[in-house]
Amino acid sequence: MSIVTRTFEAPRTYCPSASALGRMVRAWTDDRLRGEALYLVAMAGLTVVLLMAHYLGWALLTSTLSASQTWEPLFWQTQVGSVLVLAGAGLVGFRPAVRVTCQPNAVTLQQGDKTRALSPPDIQDVRLISAQRYHRHYRRYAATQVFASAVPEQVLCVRTNDAPVIVALPESEAQAALLDHVDALAAPTSETVARP
Image 1 (cartoon, one colour):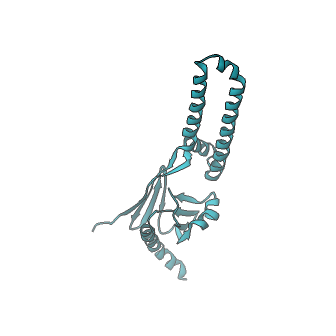
Image 2: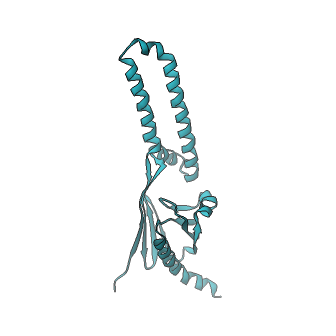
Image 3: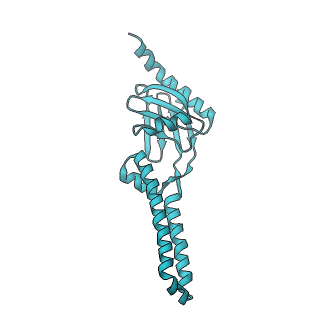
């Protein structure tokens, strides 16, 4: 008897908050929501500091730069280089791909170094919700575990014993197949709970 395993994948996507600066801030805070907020503050603050340094450098060094033909190109190369370093460290990042493996008695979710296994006793409810509901409600809770590289119009919300789990797959057929599989896993648990 062969055990059928089905796998769904969502490819990695561009995300500035997954840049080196964003990852560093999230590791420092150890909180997904606080990390995103501090990343935005850090990126805005570093941009303002860089702009002020550029203007101040030009104001203080104008006479020195105009007196030397070799210093002015070096000054402008440094300016451009500092912008490129900030853009590379703060804006170039990708969310890891999402991999969902469906076994007969469990579902394993993996994104980067984050993994979650869902088994029948863990699952309380499963349904598709709109991306708007996800962003307005579920995304705001620190306990919510998110497995999404990009967020389509609808995402799968699995309510578990400890926290909601959000899974986003780009293809609606894959979302529907995963919904059916998780619903089938949850069915025996809900039937036993319904009986006195």
